Length: 313
Ligand SMILES: [Zn+2]
Image 1 (tube, rainbow, N blue to C red):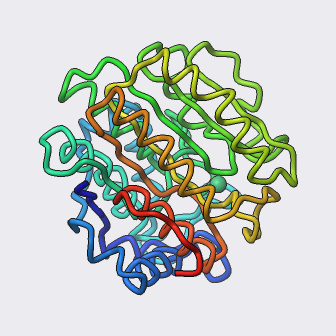
Image 2: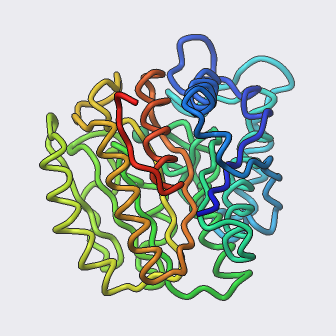
C-alpha cells in the first residue's frame, strides 16, 4: 500500500488564542508521534496546495467565501462565533486544508497513492454551505468530494465521519444528494445542536449515548453503516477522521480506545478495496487531548499502511 501524508507548515500560523483547544500543538503532536513510531517515514509526504475559488465554490457560495475574507483581521484575532476565531493567517490555512483533500483525491485517482491522510487544520466538518462554525471555515471533506465529482466524474461517494460531534456542515451541503452517502457516529445529544436527527435518505446517523465504549460503537457501526455502504457501492471513500471520541478527550464523553480507530479505518479500507479500487482519502477533524490525538492518529495511519496496531509496541 502507498499511503500519502499531506500537511503544510502554514497550518501552524492559524491560532485562535491561548487556551483554545484547536491549537497548533495538535499537528505538532500528530507529527511527533508518527515520526517517533516510525510510521511517518513509511508514508509518501507532500505539502498541500491551496484550494481555488472554483474548488471552494462547488460547496460554498462565493459570496460567503468573500464575506469570510472580509472578516480577516490585519492583526490580532476576531471572533466569528463563541469558539471560532480568525487571525491574519487563518483563511490561508483553511484554503490549504481544503486543498489538501483536493490533492489527496488527485493522488488516488492518478494512482500515485492508494490512500491518503491529510494532517491539516483548521478542521472542516462543521462548516455549512454558508456558515463557518465549530472551529471550521471551509468544509474540507466536502470540497474534496465535490472535486472528485467534477474532475473525475465520480457518481457514488461515501463519507465516513467518526468524530464525536455530528457533521452538521457535511450534512448541510449534501443532504438529499443521493450520490453522497454520509455515515456519521456522534455523541447525542451534543454540540453542534443542529441536524442531530437528520431525516435524509443519504444520511446514516449513529447517535451514541455519553459513556459509550468500544463494544457499543463497533456494534452500532456494523449494524448501521455496513448495509448502507454495501448498497451504495462507493467509487471513493472519504473519511472525516476526528479522534475526539477517544476516552481521554476533554471535550466529550465517549470512551473509544486506540484500537477502535485502527478498526474503523480497516472497515473503511475494506469498503474502499471492495468497491473503490482502494481509493480512500482521510482528513483530520477533531481530537483535543494531545497525547491521545497523536496515538490515535498513529493507529489510523498504521491501518492505512496495512500495519497491525499494538499499543505496547
Ligand atoms: Zn469533534
